[in-house]
Image 1: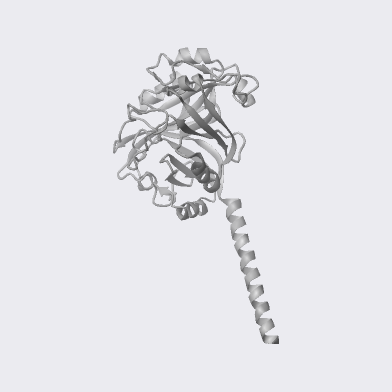
Image 2: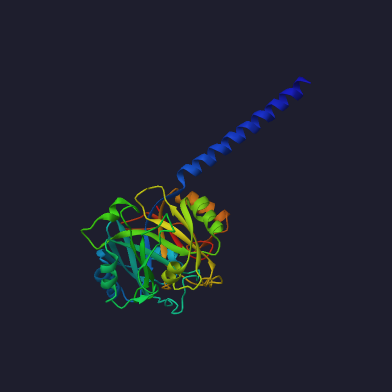
Length: 342
């Protein structure tokens, strides 16, 4: 009887020890793996020199770096063999974008018939201090309008009332947005009147299922939901060039408060947006990459793998030179590309 009691005690101690160790591992993983900051976006362009000129002259960006990359690490990161890539880094305020021209091998252009509800749609929002001046300025640079004209969010949408927006396409076909915040909306830095173009507030991606996307970006990557709304009416229709548009918008933010955010656009109507081709890779112009700085990238990669995430890179890649030491490219549930860096 005493031996049986001791055996039960040993099993109890063993179970308790296992539970403590499991909780410890989970707490460490939670503490050290996840998103800290959205560092910017990488866009593939057809001609780097022309694109740099467009972003500098039309939108106020400033080129801060240019390099040509030819390395097995770039092949592994992008899943594209034999790459030769010209990369320019441009800054606007506190935010940055990377423009990448794949000298070899080239990729597909942005589909000319793309619509706002297509699941490859992604834009980033450039904040301006004066919408009318900014609209007049960019209109002279070969853009193609998505919106009919700049739109003002009506008072009925209390959270966004007075915000002005205009969506358009760059000469390469990338969707972009001009965004103006009235005094009672947005971050304080968006009230700077000394410059016309101020920075990037967020990027928006069209999704098929907001909850499924939330599980990926919040539960796995580590962004946090910051709010949401249901937008409809003539303003939304004119902004998106989508008759009858009803859009569920979900905003997410990373750990660092100054970082740009990410928005989901789920079109309840018009529904039936086309899926992104599974074959698209970073040398295809439509596959914009959101660059997210994380901690615990190797742990995060394991977590993504156990949840059947689609990997562009076969594994975490070690990079040489300035910048990030390690990187990994994956696709979200709708095929949007995310570059995780550490």
